[in-house]
Image (cartoon, rainbow, N blue to C red; front, side, top):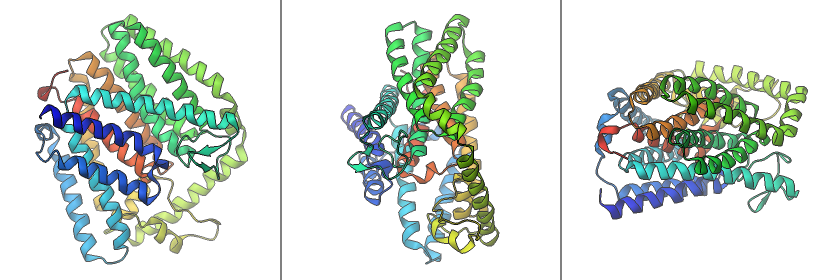
Length: 410
């Protein structure tokens, strides 16, 4: 790619990553469509398919193409909810554009974008904590209507900030491990400060599922470092230091965490509400098993199946996968899951075979953030938040790009 075009695309993606959370998580139509338009605009300047796409698993590529073809056919055959489905299709196409654009960037550009992603997560945490401590309790220029006392950053919902912070945290841990291997201690302590701020912000969101998903993937992905690391001293320092940072963040954010753990009645009521919604949502699958209800139509269909024991309206199923199964239908949903599983195993295989230690560290961190986000989706609806949806696919594209050694060297 020409240097001028490379710079333009990288700068555009920097702007995109910045604006995604700063538009209230793009939960309003103007935010979601503006971000989609930006990705389409950048894609125009990169019309040639990057060679890196040829290295992706064939099942993933063909499967995604088939899913979009099926969704397009369904869109024209079914007039019900066509406007809503069209909006969701535009968002999905924007995600594809972002993924493809990243595959054409040099690895230096990808690392810079991931570094900015991480720093933005720390800035979101710092801003959210400042709002709570000041007593002002605003989200940008809007006064908070809910979650007062919790860190929400520039998001409306604290759980959605947690989803963004999970991805940022994984990236930060990857960048932190690289200086340990390279013994660059100045950079190591600077990253440690940002990670402490980010961890504290995550605790102060009060998102128990967010914290649980991070702890789960940290435990699982540490085994990768144990199998991969050639220096036991560096790995030991890293693990002990992460424990120290976690302890510092726990001390700073313990008030919110303890209040959430002690509030058993509210937690039990929330969990029971989710179980009731999931039971009713399964009825929708029974009625729309093959074709689904259409992308984005869950909130319009669910009231028809909602039982009397659920008193309030639920716009989302609080389970990304259940909601996708309802909207896509079981055949397309299973195909989508298998496509991403193929890409997931591709990434794991490439991680263990990667020769560049720095690239391994950064890709490992990004992959850990993606996995935490995916686990969080079992009890929330982060994929229904356009900013997090876009950034998840964009980060996935970055990790995949870093794992393709034969196309570029860093």
